[in-house]
Image 1 (cartoon, chains in turn purple, blue):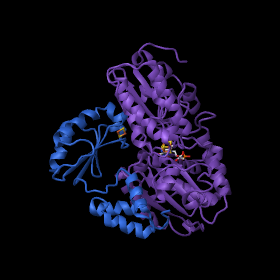
Image 2: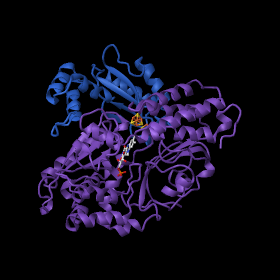
Image 3: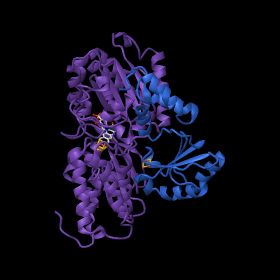
Image 4: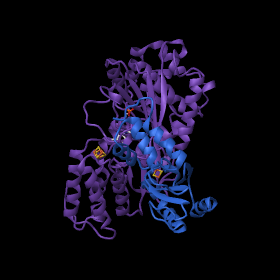
Length: 411
Length: 139
Ligand SMILES: Cc1cc2nc3c(=O)[nH]c(=O)nc-3n(C[C@H](O)[C@H](O)[C@H](O)COP(=O)(O)O)c2cc1C
Ligand code: SF4
Ligand code: FES
């Protein structure tokens, strides 16, 4: 029986006046190098989807010379099926704040930002109050806890553009520009917000950092597997009986156990048709592929990826074209339009799919879709274009009988 | 470009929209002056964001998520019922300027679908009946 392992989850934590900020106080006594050592020892990987080691990111930022550095919390959560950052912002926002402050102190940033998607009106209200209270209590401002560390945070509301979750789009967005991705390098660590070195971290990564400093790197690193340390918040949704945010220790269970034990099984049926293990940018897995352990490497070996931790279950009776259309519409709606193939290709694919309401696809059409996908990915400046066809292609590959006229063997 | 570090452009536009319900042209002109940018650039930045409006919307902006997880929770039926009730399609505003209807992508409540936002209030696990009741209360 799979059980949750609560490293991040816990009782509601929103009252600044009674919170002791244990992680931050400890961090201030450790100093930047030892904080970064702890985060590196814990082997925390960024939880925003790309999985970059947080310790390395902070270390690179610390090494950067610059009169000013920025630390940004990415709370633009918007990939369909993902709602775990909202859980943290609503229930454990002080941990997120604490993680942001620890990171800022470690890398030498004096100004922070929390960028929350504009539709998250409740989290916005909560975070706004917390920032005000923290300023009043002297937890933000000058000489924090008598350490000589000065730091303040601005709340920025997004305004309905999923692509602003990409860190360079997010930086452009804070600068008041269209939220389009930047060409890298330079990376934000080198030249980010207003041209200064900038660290962008996901909400969950920051909450992890706060807990790692408080509970110790050993505590975190002891959880999980060699390549996937600690715990992960997962958002379960779709054709499943219990749709919630769960926290599981990496490697403690398989995808199918998550669905059966935590999710209470597939809704109206026994087996799913397929499962999307990490949000709309990750390949679908068939029921027989769900025995992989829930780790970065486990899901990769099954042919997909862990992404943002959004597990979407699709039930047996679902119409595939209907699903394909939803997926492609998302990419068509959310492309920022900078790279021509991403802008036009995703539109074309949506059009092609919409012509097939009750009609199978020819082998040529499927090839064309794959080709367009390759071109989009090759020309893509950001992750949206790089992965916009991953799920759609995987559905064609896994359900040829249902979708393709005469099965041709594409291996 | 729009580099006034103490003034966050997005926040200013949100505040303008909270005051007027949309971003009127004279405010765009003022932003252009303030940031010392051509109007087209300011306009282009505002138009990039789907939550900003440069024309008046209905008093109530109704957003229904029809992304995948909500779709699996029958958001399409909810959408049809609301479309029918309001006599509006995606992107339209009623002649009496009471409602604007928008079909949107994920709102981050994927476990509680179908969901509908009325301005900044979120309603989850909605039956069609309950959704229409909420809309009637707006009338
Ligand atoms: C289209 C797109 C959307 C993204 N959306 C988010 C998001 O909502 N939240 C997030 O933390 N990272 C998002 N990312 C990843 C960020 O670019 C970045 O990798 C992340 O914020 C870094 O934080 P981490 O190292 O703590 O994971 C997105 C990336 C792309 C390409
Ligand atoms: S890949 Fe797509 S979303 Fe990303 S920058 Fe290019 S056009 Fe924009
Ligand atoms: S899919 Fe509708 S709220 Fe996320």
